[in-house]
Every structure is written in structure tokens, then in C-alpha cells.
Length: 381
Image 1 (cartoon, rainbow, N blue to C red):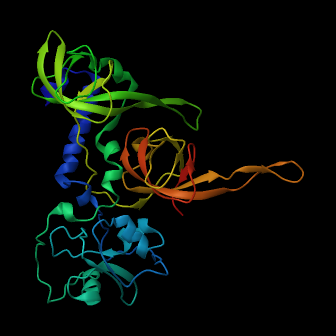
Image 2 (cartoon, rainbow, N blue to C red):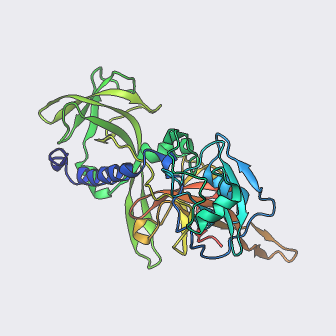
């Protein structure tokens, strides 16, 4: 792999690093499904976690459920789920939850606990929380495939932005291979069509993705400096290189994503991202930020929308962090014709599912009203 990427320039070095990170993550998980949650120590319940007043004593998991939905049924603050969940360390993959599992609320002398009924009810949940194991429950491996377990958030709603989009440094654009034409003189995105790519380092038999270029992210930080956080790319097609001659590669398209392939579209190694193994709902660690882009070029975001925030891994943002979303209410004129600004209000929540150096992708978990571009984010209360 190293030999392949050494000839491509800065952007391919960047993509290589990203691919290696993805491969490392995939050794921990096979998909978002395996990334449902990771737990803190069973014995360390950091602070009282408040249950919803209508929380069920028993909940039977259904196909189509997500961990966020289930956590919201039980807790007023779903991101605190790892503090109250009790795992069974005697079974393989004890953190996963499957359809038809029975989730119980149990109480010992000090704490309220939530755990899976392993056939021994709350007696077993309490014993496992204390580090003990009831004699009746023997070590066992569940005969069920990992993709059957419930995800944290719906994978289908973020798939495009997980696997078919990326952000690369602005300095890498010039050195990235790009489309110059097609075999019949007309560019399209039909499977089987051959397009020609100019650039170094493309190898016969290897898979590559074609990306259209979006607007760069130009950020203005609090110290009044301006940062180019990179250019967003969205995948339009992918294919296999069948020939390379004199710096021109022939790319035969094998997949299309309902977008036309155009001249100057960029070509990069095809990527497959999965959420890292330590994907868990946690409160955000940074104090504030803003929503700077809404996927789909729409003016407002709502529940299930994907947005970009102006904070990234360099600022401490991590996958799984949860933010409150706030925005100013509308202004109006009072009886004296004075313009009055109504107070800032919480209008929703988002969860981070992918980070870059200076920006991150977030998934809107809840929204009371349409969320505007420029809305603020902050650590949840």
C-alpha cells in the first residue's frame, strides 16, 4: 500500500492515513451495529442518573430500535446511558443489544440500574453490577450475527456522509488526479462507461472513487484568524483502473450515485468508513460552536438531518459526543416600535458521527423547530 501511495502526492498520503485509521477501527467493529455502546466500569456509577417519569420497568427490544431511542425511553439525559447500564462480562460482546432482549430497571440499596434480563431478572442485574454472578447463569455465546444487534443511530441516515463524502486539505487539490474526458466524448455516470483520468499514482486493477468538489470550509475563529478547514468532496461514482499510459488512466465505472461525472472531478482511492469501536453517547467536552453547513443545500435542518459544525478533532470533538443546539428566537417590534430580541432557546440536539481536523459531521437527534444555519451548539445541560 505504501508503494502505491508514495507516488500520488500529499492528498494520497492524507487518504492513506485515513484508510489506515479506518482499517484499525474495523478490527474493532464490523459495522455501526457493533458500535452501539461501550461501558464504564459496572461498579462506578458516577452520579445519580434521572429516569423518565414514564420509563417502563421492562422493555422488549424491537427490530428497528436504536440505542438512542431506548436510552431516551428510560433516561431524561440519554447520553448518560453508559453510567447506568450493566453488562454481563460472562458472555461474548456483552455490550450489544438485540431484538427481543428484555431490558429491566432494577434497584439495589444505593443505585438504580438498567440491564439485560439473562434469565435471572433483577437479581442477576444487581449481582453483575456488584461484580458477582448468579450461580444459575453459565458462560455462553449467543448464536446470532453481529449485524442483528441494534445500532446507536440509524445507519441509513448517515451512510452517504460516512462512506461517500470526505474533506481534504485545500493544498492537496492541485496534486489530486482528475477526470479529463470520456471514451465517447460525453461524460455521464453509466456503469461500464470508461473515463480518462490525469494524474500520477493510479494503478491498474485498483478501485477508485470519483468526487465532485463542494465549497471549501472557511472558518473565522474567536481570535479573528481565518482558517481554511478543507474542501468537501461528495462521491458521484466509482470504478476500476483498466489501463495506464503516459500519465493517463482509464477508469471503468462500476457504481453510480445518481450524479453526473464531470470534467475536473477528483479521483481518490475508494474508502470504506465504519464508526470506531468506542462509539458511545457522551456529553460534549467543548463549550461552544456553530452549525456551518446543512447537507442537501437546504436552508433549515430538522430531525435526521446531517450538518457540519465548525469544531473538529483539533478542538477536542470526538465521535459520539452529544451537543445541545440553541438559536435566537425571532425579533419583533413592541408597541413602542422598538426591536426586541427574544431569548436564546434550546431547539434540538445533535450527535457527532465523523470528525475531521477542523470540522465535524453531526446527526440531528431531536428538533423542536426548524434549525437554522448558524445555530449554536454547546455541551448538554
